[in-house]
Image 1 (cartoon, rainbow, N blue to C red):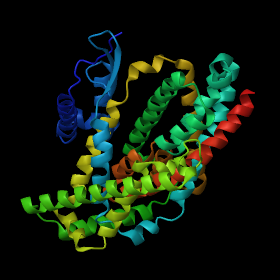
Image 2 (cartoon, rainbow, N blue to C red; image 1 turned 60 degrees about the horizontal axis):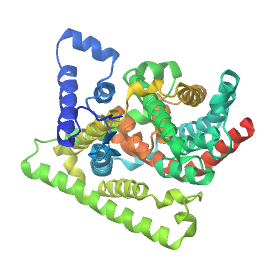
Image 3 (tube, helix red, strand yellow; image 1 turned 120 degrees about the vertical axis):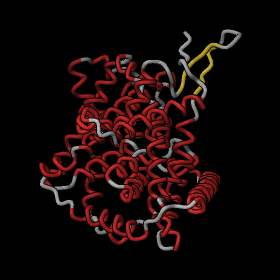
Length: 433
């Protein structure tokens, strides 16, 4: 069956995504009373995410599709926009957003960020077995299967993705040898449930003040960091010249190039010299990810540049350009969400929703107990579930200066992702045996 979307040309699709961005920012800054009321309910960032999702859901655009070639073969094709955004614009955004970072103030955020991240990890580890147990009472066949078709093996790949990232997910596929023909169903659950949870977090960001009040949280350390960065930016603020803008982009993409080079070299070296890294079934296989090292290097170099004279380019709008890149990334992430597919495999989707609900409830409980700000809850969750591609997006939605917090936690997620996922898988295996 031909499932080709209406528009497949990435140039045109990019135009649609930029139209969506322009529409959201134009209407959200409008003085029209109707739009003001609308954006009080629906945050602008959520709309940036949802509009591309709607275009995908009605078949206008798609992140990937199947088409039939001239000799009748089914051929898979995909858009390169997310790949470009996550590999080029994301590291560039991280660099520009960390130019003005106050590292001492960031460390003064305290241990609650790490506590909430580890709570999110614990929520994924126990959420999987709980979801499998609950669904087994309602629909035993949904969590059944034997050998390579056993559902718990497939769910292990979800655990890898939701604690670490793509590399950890691939490691789980190798370790537990889930049937590759059914793997696409698990990827679908990953995309749908993770993106639905991201949408909920975006709604929460728009109501973060009320949520923090309910949590009785102390946001002073976060406010101090934001105030320091904003105060510094206002002191050096100036109208950017063409020279300023070119230098800002030069800084960003030169470091992106260095980060990619470093990521490639480190990844290749580790794969060549360490069998535990090159073995996809190894718990250390996530260190073979070029993306992992690229993001780590970009963040480290961005922080390093904050101690140099390049920091002054924050006054010319460095973090604003970084934010622009982040919004383009969000639009391409939203494009990956096809709401029609929620009904394709309702049983597995339900497992994912129950799983994510356990994760969310544990986060809320611990945040309430330790009075952690919603920022730590949202970023701690997304550092697990979304990884390095979306954790800084959520963090930057609170303030551009906070993006590096999301990255640092997400990088930690890569490190523990495989181990946490293996524990989750074994617990699910025990429950289904």
